[in-house]
Image (cartoon, rainbow, N blue to C red; front, top):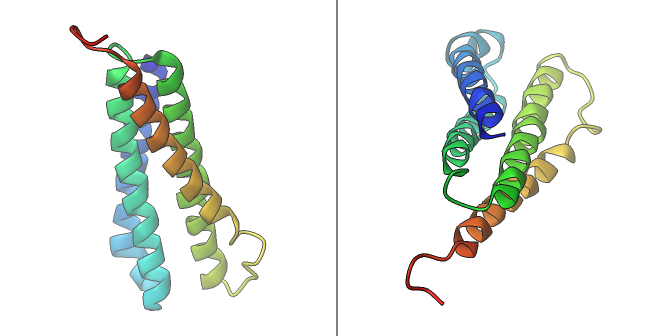
Length: 134
C-alpha cells in the first residue's frame, strides 16, 4: 500500500509545483486582490507541506502501524483535496465574480482532516514499542 501513497505523493508534488508556479506568475496577471493571492498561496503551501508529509508516511510504513499510517495518508489526501482544492475553487469563483457560499464551508473540513492525519501519525508512532519498553 505504501507504494501507492509514495506514487501519489510524487504526482501531487509535481502538481503542487505547477500550481505554485501559476500562482507566482499567472495568477497575479488575472487579479491584484491581495486577499485572493494570499489565500491561493496558503493553499499551495498547505498542499506542499502535506505532500511531503505523505511522502514521509509512505516511508514509515515499514516501521509503524500500517493501519494508523493508512488512516494518516488517507486523511492527508482528503485534506489536500478539500482544504487546498476548495481554496483553488474559491479563487476561481471570486475572480469570475461568482457566488462562493456553497464552497466556503469545505475549507475548514479539510483543515480538520489534516489535524486528524497528524493525530493518527502521532498514535502510530506511540503505538510502536521499542526494545526495552514493557
